[in-house]
Image (tube, rainbow over all chains, first blue to last red; front, side):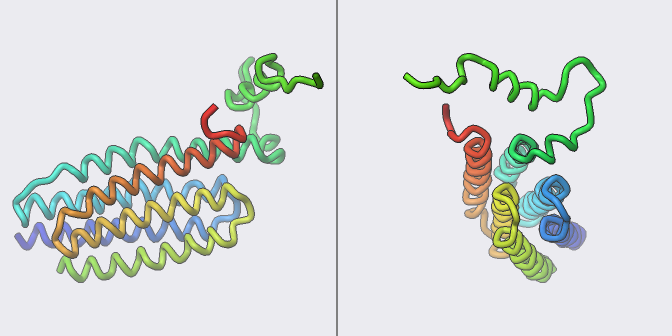
Length: 132
Length: 89
């Protein structure tokens, strides 16, 4: 029982540490693309180890295993990359200097995000009609 | 022992939330603020899980799940709005 308690406490502390480091990175890093790295670690490692601690607690000490934590973990692990990608995409498409600082792909096609935006601009379906 | 760990974790998450609020108030761009809001939601989920462990109750897990869902939908909707000027086209 004492082993389980030590393990749970350690996992809680590790989770809190990673949440703190994620927010510290968000507050201190110089630009958005670098700031994106902080919260992703907070999500996966911080929340992940806290939920493992919680699962271990209800399984080993209360002896009533629960699977809610698995649901939260699964949901967060699925959505965190989508969020980060949406923010990065919005950043690249909104800021000219971000768009110009991307290196080339080294292939006949460019970056998918930029190509799609360019194709959208030339497409007749998204053209703004000029006058009546 | 778990109680002490929970107290330390709560304090750490409180400081983390303050750092996130700093970025939310300061952030030079809208996207910085969206990222800060997303991080704030993550911190809140961590806080809810720790408090559930502290009070020895499973009641808070539904709250954490709801927070995760609402946070994800909010972030994606805001990004979509910034990208296209519309949430659902």
